[in-house]
Image (cartoon, rainbow, N blue to C red; front, side, top):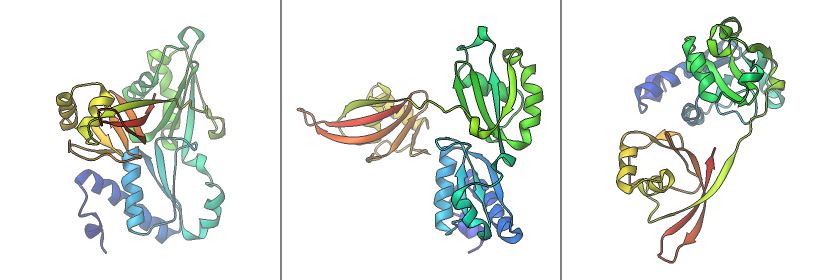
Length: 268
């Protein structure tokens, strides 16, 4: 099947991504060399894996610098390296790097994720060149593509917010381990329709939840969803922009008024 036939069911944005991946697959097979993408977000990872399964491509790995990373690059490798990739990713630090920003004492605890990301954007860095940003009170570890490392080491100190910080490279094995905090909550809904569940998760009226969905602020399993009547299933991940990300963990049962009680895990 040719490229056009493989991609015809996808929208233009997804076609562009998957077309690039097909080109990298062809390069890897023809040259017998490893190839990789820039960082992919969760939605891009999802459609990439579905596509690779569809075309029966098995020689790949998604990796972002540590096991729990959210943003990952796709690494494609030739068949001859299959055994090696079962145990480790060779030369991974030739592809991705880590920058540590160590804040001065007087600034510690004052910056959050968006302070680091907006600073990088001010320097003209594209989001796909950046992996996870792991923040704690002392500063942040920022995972980046290798080809922007030197630029960032030179330019980050030119930003006022980081002018007094120590900025240097660390190895991937020394990345700060992120604290992934989750809360478990119970919601009571009249049905498993998306609008009903969004209403409870976002703590808004049913009418307002419909507005949120139709304004393309809701994602189910990292895919934008505008169908308010979509039935939600066990294990679904619901992201509401401005409200957070939630996983449907368990259908507990019915309340006295015959409404459904659902256990939800919320990412903090």
